[in-house]
Structure formats: structure tokens, C-alpha cells
Length: 117
Length: 113
Image (tube, rainbow over all chains, first blue to last red; front, side):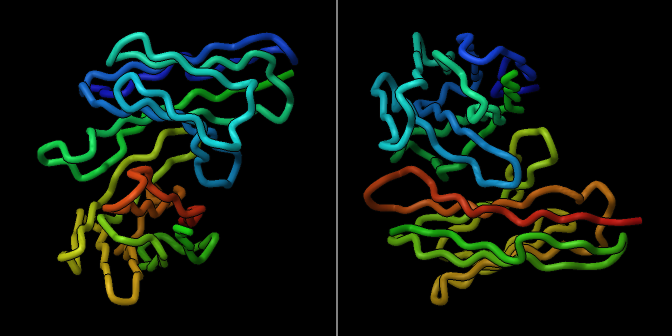
């Protein structure tokens, strides 16, 4: 059974039209991450939540926002997508640091591929 | 600065052959190293997790090694199959400071029939 679920798998939007990507998890992990991955590149961390605490990477554009209304759900909002924002967006979860049995393993969803026309 | 370097960047092999992928890291203090397999258009899936005290770990045809002294890891794939065609990403976590893992750029493996 899928443990990290992302929707939609494929999203096509027009230049400047807001987009929301969703991520849900059944693992009850404290930490949720959003990564941007472009072709043939490593995933790039945009931001993450440690419980309700939001942590933004210094180089994440203001165009990207996130919400985590509860432990299970996290959203990525792209306010005005540009052509350069076309990418695969990966959601991942992990257990809290110090948690019993924690290996720091990231559990990824299948990703949401964004196309900007 | 924590860094993870992978080589080669890409690799093409024939079905049935073996191959070895390399990962060098500067992450310190070291906590663990993971190899992920990412099929095209899919999310990464964990293959192995290695901690400081582990030298070798196998998962089917995949065998990972770790040399914590030289800060190197390798992923050996035995008797490759077409389904092994994917990107293999090395991810290293630190036990101090930031708990955010450091990603390598990945090795793209293509297995030809």
C-alpha cells in the first residue's frame, strides 16, 4: 500500500496560473519535505516541516509556498508558475530525529510532474 | 560544506553484466548512507541503508559497501536486468547539526538487451 501519496501525478498549467500540489502520508512521520527535481539532476530541497515548524531553504523562490494543515497532509503552492518551474515535485517524509528506530530514511511519493505552457 | 559526489554520471551496460557505482562524501559527522533507485518519472525507492559500523549490505542483486575511513561507498549490481535501468542516488545523513540529508546527483544506468 502506498504510504506517501502525491496528487496529481501530472499537472499542466499555463504561465502564471497558480497550482497546488498535494501530499498525504499514512506513516505518521513528523517531518515532511518538498523537493524539486529537474531532468538528470538531484532533487533540490525547497522546504520542510518538522511537525508544525516550517523551514524554508534560503534559495527557494518566494513563488513557492507550503501549508501543512495536519500531520498527514502537506501542500505545495506555486503562485505564478514560470517556464523554469516545470519539473518533478517530490514529497518525502521521515521520522523525527531521535525517534526510536529512526534511520533517517526518506520515504518518497511518486512525484507530481508539472508542465508549464 | 557537506557534499556527495557520484561517479560515473552515466553508465551503459549489457544485460547480464555486473557494474559498480561509486559515491564519495564529505558529510561529517556521519550518520548513515542510503542508496536509492529512481525509475524514470517515479519517486526514489530505498535500496540499502548503511550505518557507520556496517561494511557490506546486500539486497538481492544489489550489494552496497561502505568505507567510513575513506568516506566512500559503492553499489554493485550483479547480473543486471533491463529493469535495473534507472537513476541511482546516494544520500548521506549527518548525526550532528542539520538532519537534512545531502543528495548526490545520481548515476544514470542503462541496461541494453
